[in-house]
Image 1 (tube, helix red, strand yellow):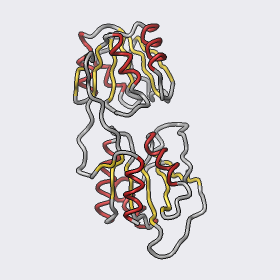
Image 2 (image 1 turned 180 degrees about the vertical axis):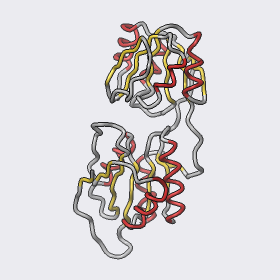
Image 3 (image 1 turned 30 degrees about the vertical axis):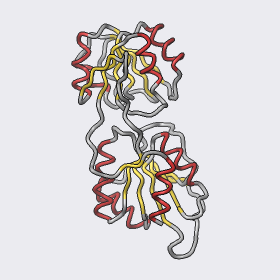
Length: 260
């Protein structure tokens, strides 16, 4: 699906066509800043993994490109002059495809990302490299587990099926995991510390599983876990692709203006 908007025009060298690979709060904030920008003709691409995404105020394309070759072909066909990868820090395949496609098409690329969370005093974090390791780490961490990892990888916890799982996601997992004691909480952040404390106390949560996504939209659960003394199994981010990073919308806008 492509929602169309008038294409800005200008003289030679005045305009840069930019593609934002979106799906995060940072991508939405960048789109708002670029809407109506006199020197940047930006559009957003969403992967389509969320059924009812919050659409940005720019022309928006929903769905995949068909791998590296498909994305490279799109960049060439549309005359894209710069790409901002503002996807989720765990969208490793999308970011890898973006890096390869931009290299193939000769289009400059930057990653707009948020700093990772760092454990502080009072935190009880168990660092793990992936979801399979997270499932194994739960074996000695209590009965009721709060999964705050989205819907894509919950099947990994079928390896530890004897727990009671609370799964919070924007959309239900498809298919539902084979977990005998499972409850779904369909909700979208940002969340508050007070709300997270009430949820964890009310449900008797004894352990939490989280991706190290960073950012403020979902960090309230970590403050609540600290206050309650709960262990957090923290899945660390996948390795990057060597693409230079930008931190903050101002930096992203400045870079795009420099490309133009």
